[in-house]
Image 1: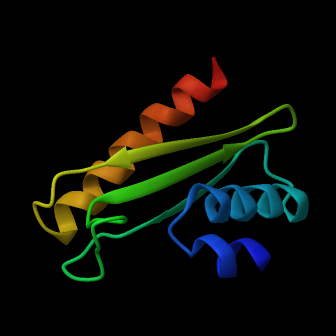
Image 2: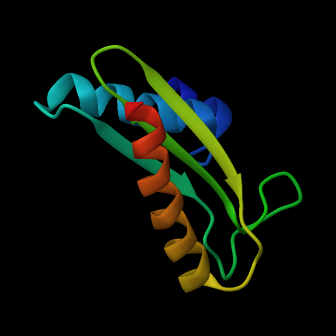
Length: 94
C-alpha cells in the first residue's frame, strides 16, 4: 500500500509488490503481474501512454521488466504486452 501511494499504480515498485504477493498467496510455479497505461488517455510526460511493467516471480527470483510501446492505440498496446509477457516467461524460465 505504501508503494502505491508513494510511486503510483504504474511503477516498478507496484508491479513487484503485486507479483510478490501473488506468489505468496498462490500455489503457482510462476506468477505474472502487469501494470501500465494503455490509453487512450491517462498518460503524462513522466508516465506516457505505452508504459508497461511486467513482473515475474517463482520460488527463486522476482524480475520486473519495463516496456515503452509506441502509442498506436489501446488494443495495440494490450497485444504487444501479451507478446512481451509470453517472451518474458520463456526468458525467465531459462
